[in-house]
Image (cartoon, rainbow, N blue to C red; front, side, top):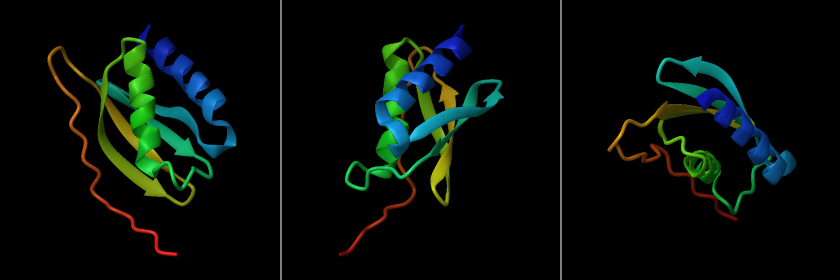
Length: 102
């Protein structure tokens, strides 16, 4: 059931973002999953906002997740999400800050 919701939210996210950002589950873990995000990503939106938006979309469907880790690679990132237990709150602070100077 939870897997079906996550897969459905992936499809919804992909429709919403088009080629700008696509997500798919690449691994299921005992207490979560690994999602791979690829695309050109909107520079003004903020790279990490996509990962948090995905978590918010899941929460809207009753699946609460927290971000454990983000592993960036050229053109995307792999994000490790963990299902939150009752009473747990998400506390994710990105480890990197990227400044773009023009």
